[in-house]
Image 1 (cartoon, rainbow, N blue to C red):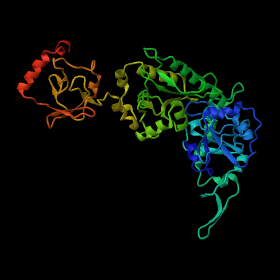
Image 2: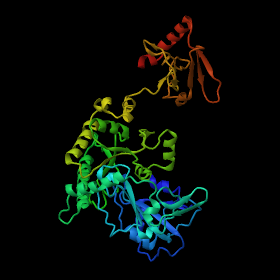
Image 3: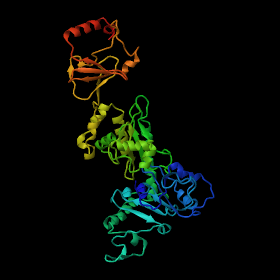
Image 4: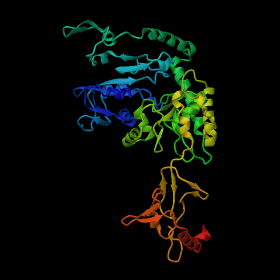
Length: 486
């Protein structure tokens, strides 16, 4: 989402979005293209690790694109339509490493992005709100800043339009007072990581963490993948690119949706409720990654707009719209996760989703739910959405929109009439399929039922008939074969 937000402030009108296959084309291409052979600058932004699926992008792409440009620019989303050709402008690379460095080692002496950003709480769990943008000397030359705030100028005058920015890159860009107390805590965070997981057997701390969380994810994935409904249908639908064979391409993340026995989706809000009851920390939704969410859930642009128009917005628990999921369930592992934690998550899914819906709902204790989930259990209970009656046999239904009387034989006026021929024999859809096009409309206040049919005049029937007429009709009905078969 933050990268999409950057599109709003860059100067160029020409903006493109690349999928994973688009970007990986640059690995396959043995071309003689040269970045910088065309005028202008281009910025490529991608994640070192997808926070939706845990897929790790090959970081050799950084040097390839810096030297050779982009073979495939992907899909253009704004600006004057350009021809589909390689982008050979001077390329800068911004690498989003927030998810990656939380459990993997980033060697910037080997892979040299012009910019990369980190989020420290994803490494330590604390403090929140502290991150960094690391800029190479090459990258500094392309950054121009107009705005200035406290601490970034030598002089600023109010009665004249004059100011002088400070010299030095960090002094130029770090506006206001830094979160120095939180920043001081970072040193303790790094020291704690190295103390808990010291370098060993030629692997540094983060390389060991990477191997460990991948082992946990592979173990959890293998266990979950074996779970099936009684009819043999898989219990879960997973979202990943390459599976869990190699930690080089897959991080410690399992993302999935749970499926009902008929293959329909379980809403992620229900899973979030059960996780809260079982004291399991997981995340649901799109994880602030709308691109990967759309890709893995196979949603069209029309689907996403329709979900929005139906009331779904980012971070809500409106999890299913017309049967399609608006997000997924993600389980992420860190250096503090234990195998028993993975087993606990697997046990929760087995106990709750290889059982009946009634048994599953019994697990949900509203008192244990956070405030944002307390409304979910009521939505999960069976709800009566619509009642229809069929006043005339084989004809269309009449939808009840208000309260309706009950009689000793069921709903008032339900199955009260039928169409017969001159011999008193019932006419049904078995022989006259167009009967289903006759629509009854009951007006209880007027005491009438209107029968409508396309391009024909309506027929009105009194709902309350005299006893003489009722006797005649009853006599006729008793002579019909319907009485013998129904």
